[in-house]
Length: 202
Ligand code: ITT
Image 1 (tube, rainbow, N blue to C red):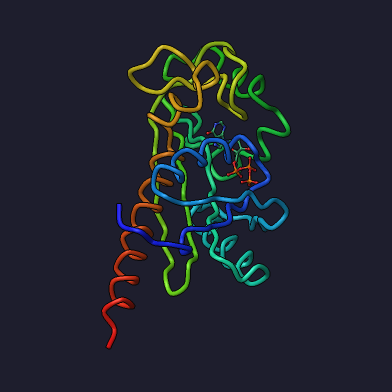
Image 2 (spheres, rainbow, N blue to C red):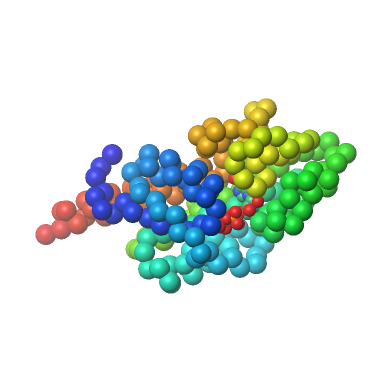
């Protein structure tokens, strides 16, 4: 990996320490130092994770004026026409995993997708990347790791729920890991190009 010197620090705007612990090893492996920054994620109401993620990043940047990354995610359940989707945070706080299991009672169609949209603002660059993880809704809660809907989500090809996996194992499958990896990889390439240009400037 080329040296990008002190260009590698980036704030991760989230109040969720589990998200941070998932992002940390990915960022480290790509040569970035991430610092968790709670309290700056303004969430608009929208049907689109992209809108929520991009708007939140712009608003946070207006205050902080430092390179930052923000992520918005949701669980889209096929049999419920994509519910709770962009409203996952509210639905988790109100009816939780038990409420979703009730809505899914007697349903044999159990497919669902976790989606994530990451926005990085690192002037002059703005990067938006998406990640998805296809899987199914379990019949009961299993595991005590992770957060949110992890105890009821089984990624395709696995038997364990996300809540039964280590962070590293969840990162093999997860929507967030895919989006973060793509976004930080792209940023790294752009920063390398930028330092090449600066080094070779007359
Ligand atoms: P920040 O907004 O502070 O980043 P949050 O937990 O509110 O943290 P989101 O709005 O992106 O994050 O996520 C919406 C909800 O979707 C979240 O509260 C969980 O209930 C659920 N969710 C998202 N990603 C998840 C994951 O990897 N595992 C389990 N549940 C997840």
